[in-house]
Amino acid sequence: MSALKSVSIITQDEKMLDLINRINKVADSDVSILLIGETGVGKEIFTDYIHHLSNRGHFPLVKIGLATLPPELMESELFGFEKGSFTNADRSKKGMFELADTGSLFLDDIDDTPLNVQAKLLRAIEAKEIRHIGDTKAIPIDVRLICASKLEISDLIDRRLFRQDLYYRINVVELRIPTLRERKGDIPLLVDHLLKRFARDKKLKISQEVMDIFMNYDWPGNVRELRNVMQRSSLFANHTIEIEDLPDRFRNINYVDNIIKSCSICFDSGQMSYNELLNCIESKLLNDAISNSNGNQSNAAQNLGLKLSTFRDKVKKLKLS
Ligand SMILES: Nc1ncnc2c1ncn2[C@@H]1O[C@H](COP(=O)(O)OP(=O)(O)OP(=O)(O)O)[C@@H](O)[C@H]1O
Ligand SMILES: [Mg+2]
Figure 1 (tube, helix red, strand yellow):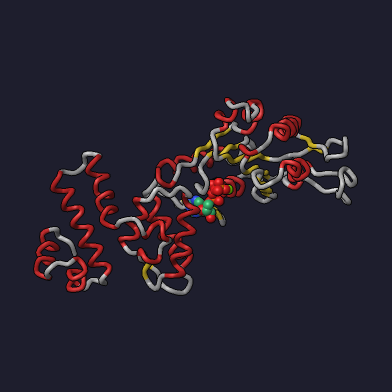
Figure 2: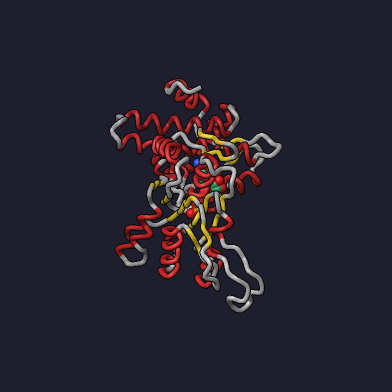
């Protein structure tokens, strides 16, 4: 796990640790960083990490989400305006570039920036100065840029939706954050972290069945989706998060299907013989039954529809505790 001040990036994945390593090397310079990744992978948490690690960490980190701003407001938000420069401009206002002066400016969803605003962004970055709307006076700015995109900018350049010259300016260092399904080893670690966060005053666990489902799920919303599912299910669960505490999309997943899928990953990669595959499936079924009945073997056997003696033979054969 990597932790810095208040920013904790929970991971044990090699690709992520490599990314953090690269960030540690460049954070202190002023180079522009472009973070690319699907929704919820952690682009914003990485931005916080970079900023706090840099020598600008004690200065402002100003964030602006370009996808949520109507195009006509983007310019005034970014560059500020003078009183009377347009209807309703009854006072002058600083823009985000000025507010971020001496610190960092996070341009989120840079892929959603219209071409006319891209041209103005490029000018500001190249000249290191901005002008308020309605004024000709140049205001020098000293900001470190961190941009985030959910799409490959090179694809947008091919489609003439993004300026190549701006791309060169914002991606001096380009970092790709892997999706959660590409680093499933992080799921148990994140679950542990989130259990502590959402347990409040109760002691909260998660059942093996739920963990199996999580390990087999694709997580299109990445870490944010996992966080939301954990937050929601921790409200419903008593001491252990069970399948019935999960949202419908998880409950409808067939439990046995999941066990077979999780074992077949090892089988498909050639790490297991046929007999080992069968043992793996059986061990998971028995282990889940035991942990779901709090170690009571009679109940576990009953839940699996097995005679207690058959159940015990299997536990012994598979050396389960
Ligand atoms: N490695 C991680 N460790 C701990 N928390 C994480 C990690 N990655 C993401 N999170 C948490 O998951 C949530 C989503 O992360 P974040 O907002 O950084 O994603 P994003 O890539 O900016 O998503 P979007 O593209 O939708 O804006 C946040 O609550 C964040 O704190
Ligand atoms: Mg974000």
